[in-house]
Image 1 (cartoon, one colour):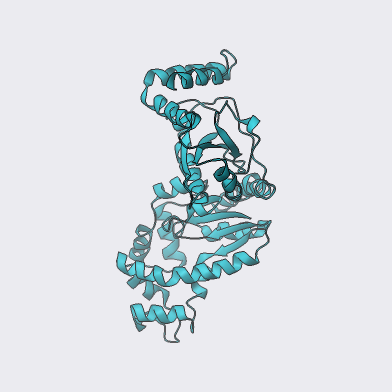
Image 2: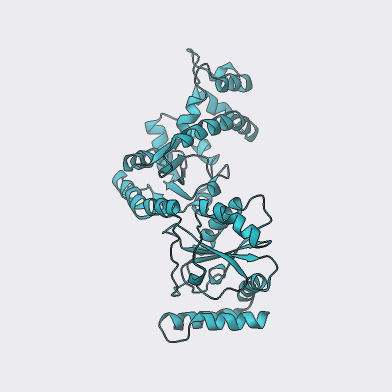
Length: 370
C-alpha cells in the first residue's frame, strides 16, 4: 500500500491535515495517539518512564503528567534520548499491528511528529510536511494548549528546522493562512497525487517521463536526494550503489523534467533480484524502449510511479563502459563550463525544434569520454 509520512513542527497543524485525510479515505497511523496508548496507567511503558524520571511525572490519580514529563525530558539531549528509547519501540510495535490490519489497496498516513528527526523519511513513498511560522505555532500552543511560551519555544527548538523539513518534503502544506486554505491543499494533494500514486503503485504502472527539455529547476537536487535515499533503502543488504546522473544532476542545466538515477549492480541476477524491491519502493519496471536516450549496458529500466515526480532508474553493471561513461558525462558537465554552455544551448534549441535532438550530442560526448 502507499505509505505517506505526515509531519511538521509542534503546533503546525498536523491534526487538521490528518482529520481531512481520514475523511477522504486514508488509514491514519497517529504516532502521538499511539504514544499516549503505550504509556497509559498500568502499562509497562509508564512504569519504565517512572523508573527513569521519577514519580513526579505522575498526576495524583497515577496517570502520566505530560507537562511534567516534558519539562524533565526535554531539558537536555540525554533525557530526550532516554524518553525516546522507552517510547519509540513500543510505538513501533503498535504501529505494526495497525498496518497489518489496513487494506492492501489503501493509502496509509503515518502521522509522525519526529519523522525527520528519526530518519524515517526514506521509509515512506511520500512525505507531507505541514508548515507554519514559529510565532504562529507558539501562539497556538500557548492559547489552545495552555503551554507556557518558554516551554513552547523549547519544544520547537528541539525539533527539526524548517530547512530540514523542506529538504524532506515531497509535498509542502502551507498553514500560514486560514484553515480553508490548508484544507484545499490537502484535498488537491489527495486527488492529484496520492490517489493516482496508490493506483500506479498497486498496478506497477510507471509514469512516462517528459522528453522535451525545460529550464533548470532549483528543486531537482533535493528531489533526487529523496529518491536516492528511498532507492538505497530498497537496495539495502546488496552491493548495489545509487547515484543521481544525467542533466538534472548538473546545476543550471536545462533538461527534461525527469530525474535520472543509476543503480549499479553486480550482474543481471542482482538486477532481477532487486526488481520487486524497487517496485515496492515505488519504482516499477518500465519498457526499456522508453528510455529518454540510448543507454548502453542497460540491465533493466524502472520509472517512478509518482505522478508528481517523474524519474527514470537505469540499472547497469557496475564498472561496465555504459555505467562509467554515465558518471563521467555528469562529472564532465559539472566541471567544464564550456561543455555546460554547449549542452544548454543545444537543449534550448532542441526544445523549440531549432536543433537536432540532444541524443546525438550526448552520444558524441560519451564517445569522447570513452
